[in-house]
Length: 507
Ligand SMILES: Nc1ncnc2c1ncn2[C@@H]1O[C@H](COP(=O)(O)OP(=O)(O)OP(=O)(O)O)[C@@H](O)[C@H]1O
Image 1 (cartoon, rainbow, N blue to C red):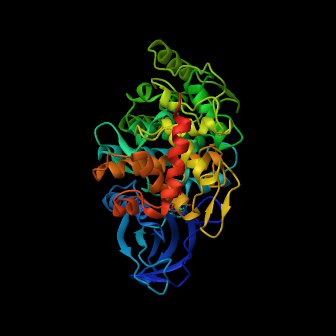
Image 2 (cartoon, helix red, strand yellow; image 1 turned 45 degrees about the vertical axis):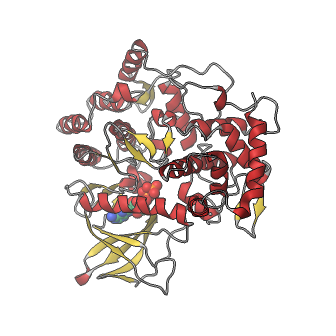
Image 3 (cartoon, protein in one colour; image 1 turned 90 degrees about the vertical axis):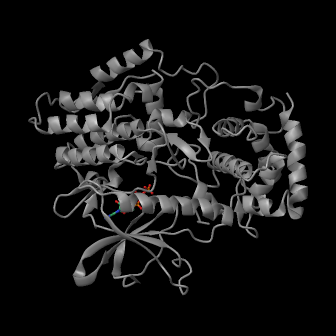
C-alpha cells in the first residue's frame, strides 16, 4: 500500500519520450488517476497524452484500479461531441526498461490551451472573460453526456477545457459512469467543492457510491456561480471542507442559499434551481433543461439587474427551501451531540444496535464517530463498527502514529501508502487524503472492507466472513480465496480480531 504523502505523484515521463507516433514535450498536470503531458505528433500536431498507471499494486487492488482505467478509456473513446474532449486513441506502453511506465494506458487527446480553473486563477474579480459562452458549451456537453446515459461524476472548472480556437470541452472521464436504472456507481471520490449534499448520505457498496445525473446538475450550479463571479464559491468557508459543511447545513435547512448579488436575476434563478437542496428537489431540472436555459440567458444582455458585489439570500433558494420543507424532503436537523465532520445526513437511515459501539470499551472516544460512520456507509451487514474497531485494534492497537517501515505500513489502519492511494477517501473532509490521518485511514478501510465482503460473496463465500475480511485486509482477497480460508500465516492475527470482535459486539 506508496506515496510519501497524500495524492499520487506524477508519472515521470521525460521530454522526448515516444509513445506510438507521439513525442512528449512536457508535463501539463496530474490528477488522481494519471498524469497529462503535452506532446507532438507527426508534423508537430499538438496533443495531450494522459498516462494512466496502475503500478505495483497488490493483485486484489490492481483489479479495481484496472477496471477504473478501462472505464475511462471506454468513455473517452466513445465521447463524440463538439463540447466533449476528443480522444483519438488509447495506447499501451511496452517498455520493460521503465517498469513504472510499462503497461501504462495512454489516452491521446486534443490538447487544450488551458482549463477554466486556470482562467479563474488569473481572473480579476467579476465574471471571467467569455463566461457565458463557456457555460453554454459546458451545459451542451453535459446534456449530451446525460442523453447518452452517462453521469460525468466530476464536473468542476479543472475539467472544463478551452481550446486554442475558443473551443469549450468537458474533459476527464475518470469518474464517468453509465446509468444503471436511475443511478450510476462511481468510486467514492469526487471533488469536495462540487459534490451535492446528498452524496454524503449515499451508501458505498462494492460497485462504488451511487450518483444520479442530478449530481452533475448541482456541480454545474457551483461551476456557473464560480465562472460568473470570478471564482466565488456559492457556499461560504475558507476551505473546501468548510464549504462542503456549509452546503450540507443549507440542505438540512440550517442556512439560506446566498448567491452573489451581482449576478443578473435570470442566472441567479437558474443557479438556485441547480443548487436545490436534494436530489428530489433538483430532479425536474435535467441537463437538457439547463442547457436550453443557458442558451436563452446567453441571448440576453448581461448586466440587467447587476448590483453591488455582496452576498444576499437568494429569493429562489428560499423558495426551493420552503417547497422542500413543505414536502418533507429536507433532512432533519441533528439533535444529538455534534456530528463529526464527515458524517452524512441521517435522514431515512435506520440505525440499529449493530451500528453503534459499546459505551464502555478501550476504543478511543475521538475515533468512535468515524468508525461508526464508515461502517454505516457500507451496505454489507458484516461490516459493522465492531468489526472495524476489532480490525483497527489488531492492526495498530488504535495507535494513530503506528509505523512499520519494514513492511511499509503506516497509521492507525496500517495502510501501505500505494494501496491507500488506490482507495483513498477524505474522511475528515479537509481536502486531502492522508493515510496518517485517522479519519481518512478509517474511512478508506471501510470502503476496502465493504468491497472485499462483496468480492468474497461473489465467489460463493458465506461462512466466517468477519474473519475472512480481517484476513483479506491483512493480505488480499485473492490470497484468502486461493487459501480457501484464513491463510495459515495470518491466523494469530485473525484470532485476535475474533476476540476483539466478541468484546466490541456485546450489547
Ligand atoms: N486534453 C487536455 N489538454 C490540456 N490539458 C489537459 C487535458 N486533459 C487534462 N488536462 C489538464 O491536465 C491536468 C490533469 O488532468 P486530470 O484529468 O488527470 O486530473 P484533474 O482533473 O486535475 O484531477 P482529478 O483526478 O481530481 O479529476 C489538469 O490540469 C487538466 O486541466
